Image (cartoon, rainbow, N blue to C red; front, side):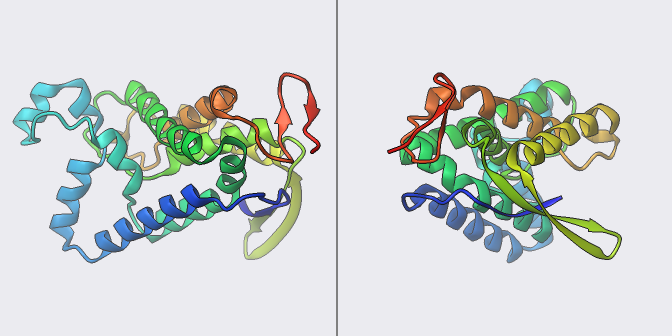
Length: 240
Protein backbone atom coordinates (compact mmCIF):
# COMPACT_ATOMS: atom_id res chain seq x y z
CA UNK A 1 0.00 0.00 0.00
CA UNK A 2 1.36 3.40 -1.01
CA UNK A 3 -0.23 6.52 0.53
CA UNK A 4 -1.00 9.26 -1.98
CA UNK A 5 -2.40 12.04 0.21
CA UNK A 6 -4.32 12.71 3.40
CA UNK A 7 -7.24 15.06 4.04
CA UNK A 8 -5.83 17.07 6.97
CA UNK A 9 -4.82 20.58 5.87
CA UNK A 10 -1.81 22.18 7.52
CA UNK A 11 -2.08 25.51 9.28
CA UNK A 12 1.52 26.72 9.35
CA UNK A 13 4.49 26.27 7.05
CA UNK A 14 6.29 22.99 7.93
CA UNK A 15 9.72 24.59 8.12
CA UNK A 16 11.43 21.67 9.87
CA UNK A 17 9.95 19.18 7.39
CA UNK A 18 11.37 21.25 4.54
CA UNK A 19 14.80 21.48 6.18
CA UNK A 20 14.97 17.75 6.95
CA UNK A 21 13.86 16.94 3.42
CA UNK A 22 16.55 19.24 1.98
CA UNK A 23 19.26 17.67 4.17
CA UNK A 24 18.23 14.15 3.17
CA UNK A 25 18.15 15.11 -0.50
CA UNK A 26 21.55 16.83 -0.38
CA UNK A 27 23.20 13.91 1.41
CA UNK A 28 21.63 11.38 -0.94
CA UNK A 29 22.74 13.22 -4.07
CA UNK A 30 26.23 13.36 -2.56
CA UNK A 31 26.10 9.58 -2.03
CA UNK A 32 25.15 9.03 -5.67
CA UNK A 33 28.23 10.96 -6.81
CA UNK A 34 30.65 8.88 -4.73
CA UNK A 35 32.66 5.91 -6.04
CA UNK A 36 31.29 2.56 -4.85
CA UNK A 37 34.15 1.86 -2.43
CA UNK A 38 33.97 5.35 -0.89
CA UNK A 39 30.22 4.99 -0.51
CA UNK A 40 30.66 1.66 1.27
CA UNK A 41 33.11 3.26 3.71
CA UNK A 42 30.68 6.14 4.29
CA UNK A 43 27.76 3.82 5.02
CA UNK A 44 29.80 1.75 7.47
CA UNK A 45 31.22 4.76 9.31
CA UNK A 46 28.08 6.90 9.46
CA UNK A 47 25.46 4.19 9.22
CA UNK A 48 24.62 2.42 12.49
CA UNK A 49 26.37 -0.96 12.80
CA UNK A 50 24.84 -2.84 15.76
CA UNK A 51 27.96 -4.88 16.49
CA UNK A 52 29.92 -1.66 16.77
CA UNK A 53 27.77 -0.74 19.78
CA UNK A 54 27.50 -4.16 21.40
CA UNK A 55 31.13 -5.29 20.92
CA UNK A 56 33.64 -2.40 21.01
CA UNK A 57 36.52 -4.88 20.78
CA UNK A 58 35.18 -6.20 17.48
CA UNK A 59 34.79 -2.63 16.23
CA UNK A 60 38.43 -1.89 17.08
CA UNK A 61 39.67 -5.04 15.33
CA UNK A 62 37.47 -4.28 12.31
CA UNK A 63 39.14 -0.91 11.92
CA UNK A 64 36.37 1.38 13.15
CA UNK A 65 37.57 4.54 14.90
CA UNK A 66 36.79 4.74 18.64
CA UNK A 67 33.38 6.01 19.65
CA UNK A 68 30.95 6.08 16.78
CA UNK A 69 27.90 6.93 18.84
CA UNK A 70 27.14 9.86 16.55
CA UNK A 71 26.17 7.29 13.91
CA UNK A 72 22.97 6.91 15.94
CA UNK A 73 22.00 10.27 14.45
CA UNK A 74 23.82 10.30 11.13
CA UNK A 75 22.30 6.99 9.98
CA UNK A 76 18.92 8.73 9.64
CA UNK A 77 20.23 10.90 6.80
CA UNK A 78 21.74 8.14 4.65
CA UNK A 79 19.87 5.95 2.17
CA UNK A 80 20.69 2.81 0.26
CA UNK A 81 19.28 3.68 -3.15
CA UNK A 82 16.72 5.67 -5.10
CA UNK A 83 13.71 3.54 -4.15
CA UNK A 84 14.67 3.61 -0.47
CA UNK A 85 15.08 7.39 -0.56
CA UNK A 86 11.95 8.17 -2.59
CA UNK A 87 9.60 5.97 -0.54
CA UNK A 88 10.88 7.37 2.74
CA UNK A 89 10.65 10.99 1.65
CA UNK A 90 7.20 10.49 0.08
CA UNK A 91 5.71 9.07 3.29
CA UNK A 92 7.51 11.75 5.32
CA UNK A 93 6.07 14.49 3.12
CA UNK A 94 2.49 13.21 3.52
CA UNK A 95 2.36 12.77 7.31
CA UNK A 96 5.04 14.99 8.85
CA UNK A 97 3.63 18.44 8.07
CA UNK A 98 0.54 17.85 10.22
CA UNK A 99 2.58 16.44 13.10
CA UNK A 100 4.89 19.46 12.99
CA UNK A 101 1.74 21.59 13.03
CA UNK A 102 0.64 19.89 16.23
CA UNK A 103 3.98 19.98 18.02
CA UNK A 104 5.59 23.19 16.85
CA UNK A 105 8.90 23.39 15.03
CA UNK A 106 11.46 22.67 17.76
CA UNK A 107 9.42 20.02 19.54
CA UNK A 108 8.91 18.25 16.24
CA UNK A 109 12.63 18.29 15.44
CA UNK A 110 13.47 16.78 18.84
CA UNK A 111 10.68 14.23 18.49
CA UNK A 112 11.87 13.21 15.02
CA UNK A 113 15.48 12.64 16.14
CA UNK A 114 14.46 10.76 19.29
CA UNK A 115 12.13 8.56 17.22
CA UNK A 116 15.10 7.61 15.07
CA UNK A 117 17.16 6.79 18.16
CA UNK A 118 14.32 4.71 19.64
CA UNK A 119 13.97 2.82 16.36
CA UNK A 120 17.69 2.07 16.28
CA UNK A 121 17.67 0.93 19.91
CA UNK A 122 15.02 -1.72 19.22
CA UNK A 123 16.81 -2.80 16.06
CA UNK A 124 20.08 -3.29 17.96
CA UNK A 125 18.23 -5.18 20.70
CA UNK A 126 16.93 -7.68 18.13
CA UNK A 127 20.13 -7.78 16.06
CA UNK A 128 23.05 -7.32 18.49
CA UNK A 129 25.47 -9.41 16.41
CA UNK A 130 24.77 -7.79 13.04
CA UNK A 131 27.72 -6.18 11.27
CA UNK A 132 25.50 -4.72 8.54
CA UNK A 133 25.08 -0.93 8.69
CA UNK A 134 21.53 0.37 9.16
CA UNK A 135 20.75 3.47 7.10
CA UNK A 136 17.62 5.44 6.35
CA UNK A 137 15.07 7.83 7.81
CA UNK A 138 12.36 5.19 8.06
CA UNK A 139 12.71 4.67 11.84
CA UNK A 140 12.26 8.37 12.52
CA UNK A 141 9.45 8.55 9.96
CA UNK A 142 7.76 5.60 11.66
CA UNK A 143 7.73 7.73 14.83
CA UNK A 144 5.98 10.47 12.87
CA UNK A 145 3.43 7.93 11.65
CA UNK A 146 2.82 6.74 15.21
CA UNK A 147 2.24 10.33 16.30
CA UNK A 148 -0.15 10.89 13.38
CA UNK A 149 -2.04 7.74 14.43
CA UNK A 150 -2.74 9.31 17.84
CA UNK A 151 -3.25 12.91 16.78
CA UNK A 152 -5.53 12.50 13.75
CA UNK A 153 -7.78 9.45 14.14
CA UNK A 154 -10.44 11.27 12.12
CA UNK A 155 -8.12 11.61 9.12
CA UNK A 156 -8.49 9.68 5.90
CA UNK A 157 -5.74 8.63 3.50
CA UNK A 158 -5.96 7.96 -0.23
CA UNK A 159 -3.97 4.79 -0.86
CA UNK A 160 -2.66 3.10 -4.00
CA UNK A 161 -2.87 -0.70 -3.82
CA UNK A 162 -1.16 -2.35 -6.81
CA UNK A 163 -2.91 -5.59 -7.81
CA UNK A 164 -0.63 -7.24 -10.37
CA UNK A 165 -0.55 -4.48 -13.03
CA UNK A 166 -3.84 -2.83 -12.05
CA UNK A 167 -3.61 0.15 -9.67
CA UNK A 168 -6.46 0.23 -7.16
CA UNK A 169 -6.96 3.60 -5.47
CA UNK A 170 -9.06 3.62 -2.31
CA UNK A 171 -9.66 6.01 0.58
CA UNK A 172 -9.10 4.53 4.05
CA UNK A 173 -9.29 5.86 7.61
CA UNK A 174 -5.76 6.84 8.60
CA UNK A 175 -5.91 4.57 11.66
CA UNK A 176 -6.69 1.60 9.41
CA UNK A 177 -3.85 2.32 6.98
CA UNK A 178 -1.31 3.01 9.74
CA UNK A 179 -2.52 0.07 11.83
CA UNK A 180 -2.10 -2.33 8.90
CA UNK A 181 1.34 -0.84 8.18
CA UNK A 182 2.43 -1.39 11.79
CA UNK A 183 1.16 -4.98 11.88
CA UNK A 184 3.05 -5.70 8.65
CA UNK A 185 6.29 -4.46 10.25
CA UNK A 186 5.81 -6.63 13.33
CA UNK A 187 4.81 -9.74 11.39
CA UNK A 188 7.69 -9.26 8.95
CA UNK A 189 10.09 -8.88 11.86
CA UNK A 190 8.80 -12.08 13.45
CA UNK A 191 8.86 -14.23 10.34
CA UNK A 192 11.81 -12.90 8.32
CA UNK A 193 14.54 -14.19 10.62
CA UNK A 194 16.28 -13.02 13.74
CA UNK A 195 19.27 -11.27 12.19
CA UNK A 196 20.24 -9.13 9.24
CA UNK A 197 23.18 -11.45 8.76
CA UNK A 198 20.75 -14.02 7.40
CA UNK A 199 20.02 -11.84 4.39
CA UNK A 200 17.27 -9.61 5.74
CA UNK A 201 17.54 -6.20 4.11
CA UNK A 202 14.79 -4.28 5.90
CA UNK A 203 15.07 -3.23 9.56
CA UNK A 204 11.50 -4.23 10.46
CA UNK A 205 11.99 -3.83 14.21
CA UNK A 206 13.36 -0.32 13.73
CA UNK A 207 10.10 0.58 11.98
CA UNK A 208 8.00 -1.00 14.71
CA UNK A 209 10.06 0.60 17.48
CA UNK A 210 9.82 4.06 15.94
CA UNK A 211 6.06 3.73 15.50
CA UNK A 212 5.47 2.64 19.12
CA UNK A 213 7.72 5.44 20.41
CA UNK A 214 5.81 8.00 18.37
CA UNK A 215 2.41 6.69 19.41
CA UNK A 216 3.25 6.61 23.13
CA UNK A 217 5.36 9.75 23.42
CA UNK A 218 3.38 12.13 21.20
CA UNK A 219 1.52 13.48 24.24
CA UNK A 220 4.83 14.50 25.84
CA UNK A 221 5.98 16.44 22.78
CA UNK A 222 2.70 17.66 21.36
CA UNK A 223 1.53 21.07 22.44
CA UNK A 224 -1.49 20.34 20.23
CA UNK A 225 -1.57 23.81 18.78
CA UNK A 226 -3.53 22.97 15.65
CA UNK A 227 -7.12 23.22 14.57
CA UNK A 228 -7.61 19.61 13.60
CA UNK A 229 -5.82 17.80 16.43
CA UNK A 230 -7.40 15.22 18.65
CA UNK A 231 -6.98 15.73 22.39
CA UNK A 232 -6.39 12.31 24.01
CA UNK A 233 -7.26 13.52 27.52
CA UNK A 234 -10.62 15.12 26.84
CA UNK A 235 -11.68 12.79 24.03
CA UNK A 236 -12.74 15.82 22.05
CA UNK A 237 -11.62 17.84 19.08
CA UNK A 238 -10.17 21.30 19.36
CA UNK A 239 -12.39 23.92 17.71
CA UNK A 240 -10.99 27.41 17.50
